[in-house]
Amino acid sequence: MAKKAFNIIVIKVGSSSLTNPQGNLDLTNLKRIALEISDLVKNKKKVILVTSGSIVCGAERLGLGKPKTIPQKQAAAAVGQARLMRQYEKAFEKYDLTVAQVLLTRDAIANRERYLNARHCFDTLLEENVIPIVNENDAVAIDEIKIGDNDNLAALTASLIGADLLVLLTDVDGFYMKNEEGVSFLADEITEIDQNVEDAAGHPSTQLGTGGMITKIQAARVCSNAGTYMAIVNGRKEGLIKQVIKGEPAGTLFIPKTSKMDSRKRWLAHGLQVEGKLVIDPGAESALLKQNTSLLPVGILSSSGEFSRGALVSIVDESSREIARGLIDIPSEELATMIGKKGVGIAIHRDNLVLL
Ligand code: GLU
Image 1 (cartoon, rainbow, N blue to C red):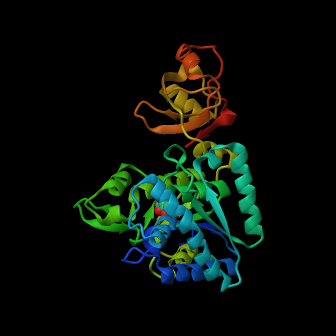
Image 2 (cartoon, rainbow, N blue to C red):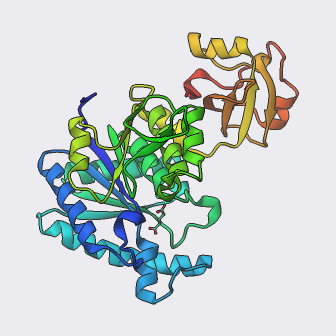
Image 3 (cartoon, rainbow, N blue to C red):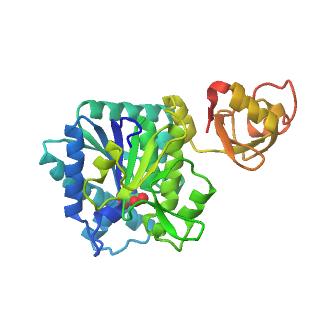
């Protein structure tokens, strides 16, 4: 059943949907996905494609087999990204559509100015009816600044652009849960990412592992907080993207827990990397949740991590459940002397706080 209108849509194609059993680029599937996306664009949908496959594509060309070292992977990505784009360009040209390449890294998203630049670029491309094709800039992204996987990259892109829906195309039919008898079943709708869901994602004995469900659930969490719907569907079956958009069952649909957050709060919640953690008491928790107040040192029970003023910290309750994130006004060393004290200022101003 349609929950809402899906107009801005991010579609992520995993390597599994783009490679054949020999590990080479599967052009037939790439072309079919391009056809489905062009149909959506012709129907006035704004679509961003997040694609994997640069490493596979480059390794194929260089005859590297499965690249092992980081420089090998980077070289494969550099070669493969160009080849991949060439194939997409050809595939979309057939439908008179122009594509654009956008390569992102973690720091491009963490830096507020670069984040806004990226957003304006996406907005302009979409206004011009161009299909932005996104990948991580693997050729230069070292571990410290890597997002690391395209499920999270797609969710961050969806949050950046304020998408209505993220569709993850993968090699299984959706997200499998286990019932009380331990039997696997395909979940058609998930409204809360609770412990059961986390457990199912991490369970090695089900077929979930092949689809890399842990990163998909991380992506679902980002979407849920940003107010974006997310679907996991089989990337080899025809017509499923359209079915999701129409609200018909087609895999697993994750319903967001909030309506759409404003853009700056989405950046606060997902763009930056968390540098510290504050455990707060129940009084402070209820003030944040019910009265939308700032966080004061008196409500903080403990602080961990080293952070300077302006860093992003995670706010958790005593059971380690994350309640909010915010930009801290007091560096960690100074904060350590203020914890539990009254009248010593504000730790995080409410304008810089986002409830999760
Ligand atoms: N960015 C990688 C590539 O293009 C893929 C990462 C992923 O699939 O999660 O090969």
